[in-house]
Length: 481
Image (tube, rainbow, N blue to C red; front, side, top):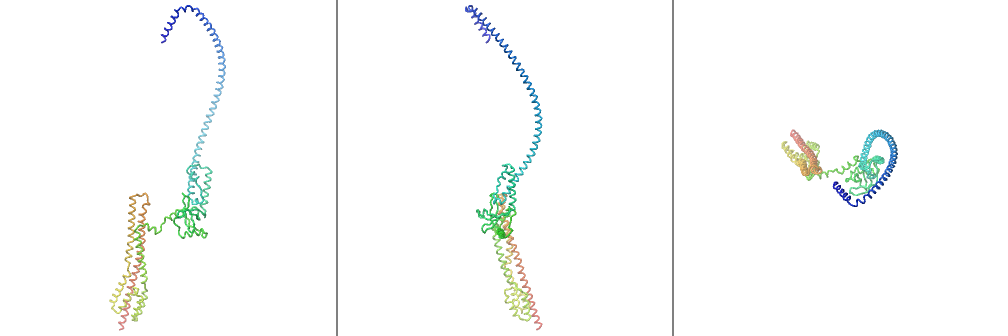
């Protein structure tokens, strides 16, 4: 593009030079050019002079600035040396501070571990103290709050000295209350589940008793509700009397549950004999029927045998005296008032044939003895049978209960033992009841059998004695004849 513009400018200049106006104005132009050159020269000289002056001023300013700069550099160098010295001092101080920091960090770590351990111990003691206060039955009477202890145990607040002092004061209060016996008027939940006012006797933190009207019983403490509940079952009459006498100041001893309610809770779950029998299932009723029947038979046999007792030795001695005088009618009259006694009836049967030969008289006596035996042994076989049936029924109840237990295990597994308690109760109660019935019935059967054997032996002995008396007397008569 540049050669093109050069050729274009050259062409325009040639055209301008060839024009007539160029010749006429050439002189004027030269004059103007000369004037312009002079003006330019003057301007240039003025500019040179001004530039020279400016250069001089700049040189002076530069010298001034250089001197100031040299001074500033010197000052900065001095300040730099001072700063280097300060930096070296700071480095030394930093190193010293780092050593101190390390030492303080170790001390802080040790102190922090000690503080953490102390805080942990305080929190653990706060939780233990909170549980102790909540489990203390006197909390229901005093209304002590344990919110700050729970907050300390749950790490909701940091334990300060005020909280620790408060915790110590509460601990000493618990120690003092644990050794106090107090009688206050307070609110309890009675056995019907209603709130009632009663006289509350608190023996330390162990047990509490109440008196509401004529009712006296023990109280159970619920830590969750912070209330005292009357046990559903009243204590024994002896314990009620002891509590009542203690409340009235007549006695200085009172029953105390040192297990802090565990034994009293067991008292409510303890079943009497009748309640245990109800848990034995349907087979307990036949066993109880056996007990009633066996008892009736035992009583009837005992009364019967007691009524058949007789001083047979005295009777035989008297008959022997009368027989020696050959007074057989008087001998028979001796037996008439005792006709209800088996021995007397056997002796009377022997006296009725006192004139018969010895062999015949012995047969008559033996027949009389055999006639008395069935009445004496009546119901004894039944009693023995009942003694044998009772444990068998108990064993049947055991088998039935175990079958029920295994059915529960098959259906529900062994996760909940309470689901198996029904079958186990049947298994154990029926066995216990069967043995409890069979043992006394068997003992009664044995004792009654021994008593019957004694009476039979007594009849046989007195029969032989009568035969000897009669034939001894008859033998003397025969020798006299």
